[in-house]
Image (cartoon, rainbow, N blue to C red; front, side, top):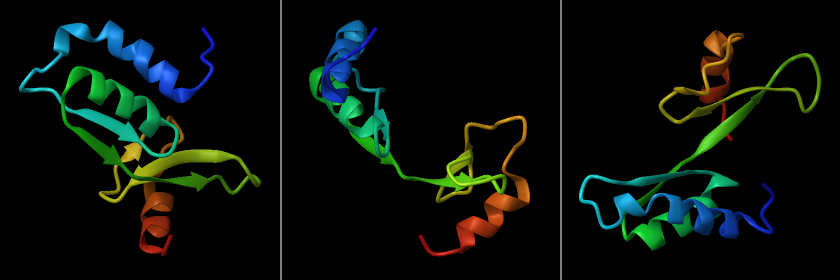
Length: 97
């Protein structure tokens, strides 16, 4: 299914999550950059808190644009790919963004 915008995708997703509306034990996490507009619409519709996960993409040494994984500031790889981030992630996290 194609959506005209990320926000419209979020509104559609929110409707599917109606059962969680105004729940006390729900928080929506938006992964920057593309996930934030989606998460905003979901959190707004469900009337639940929104928090952000800030990531840094790590590029593979094979060439430009070849993404290996993404890590957050706690050095947790998102997602854990079979090639993994391992020592590469630790080196890049220490460098300024």
